[in-house]
Length: 244
Image (cartoon, rainbow, N blue to C red):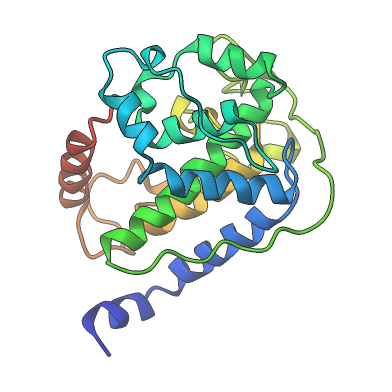
């Protein structure tokens, strides 16, 4: 057994988190049904090798490039364009773009769910790429309609999407963050609570559980101490020009 395979075999929690996400991806969501969710994931994967995205990213203004991505059976060109930009040029997403998406029929609630699907899938894919492993096969979508449910206590003052207020967790969503926490990076997906749950599970195996974020020394579940982890995270963020 290779060192990599041995290391991964000692972390069954990683495989569980990945399997859980792909099971979740196949099911109908809040505003997207299963086939649309899988199509969103497929579009996210295509973004990294998209020549149109490379052209738009290199342009002084993305609006200089009038071409749109081709539509498919599940997603409009405007939706595909946004998915690709989340992957390739997220620092230049504007509220006017979100408004245009809204006018095309993709509500801000649906946009929040879309972002969560893309973010979780991209985290998994980058994990695979970092280890020179093949990307995991996308699941076959399950039948059914989107629930069109949204949580209570949403506010719209913080960003482009509705979020549950910091102190607005009801019994149905009280597991999203610890009391008194509610950082914007967590709340950003809270209009689609199941995406917060998926993101938390992936973050827990790739990085740290949310409950351990205040542990700035050494987690019992990690071989690297927190300073080593943050040094790596900071370097990767700098390379990726992460504005957050």
